[in-house]
Length: 66
View 1 (cartoon, rainbow, N blue to C red):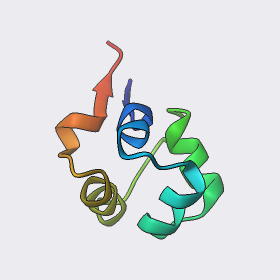
View 2: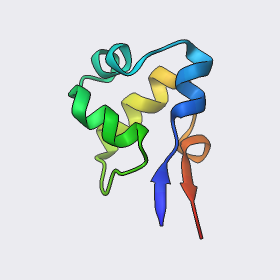
View 3: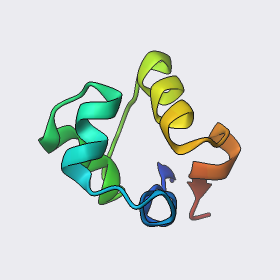
């Protein structure tokens, strides 16, 4: 299963989920789902905003548990 792992990047940037939610312009519940690794789909626009805010590439935050 492929999922997003943003916990370390959020900590590194000193951001909480509420701040992050505002920066990437999605709702707090959606950020909680992403942070918990329970996201089942994500738009490229959202992924791009996440990467810009966290100053990373998709390779840095997309993980596979296989």
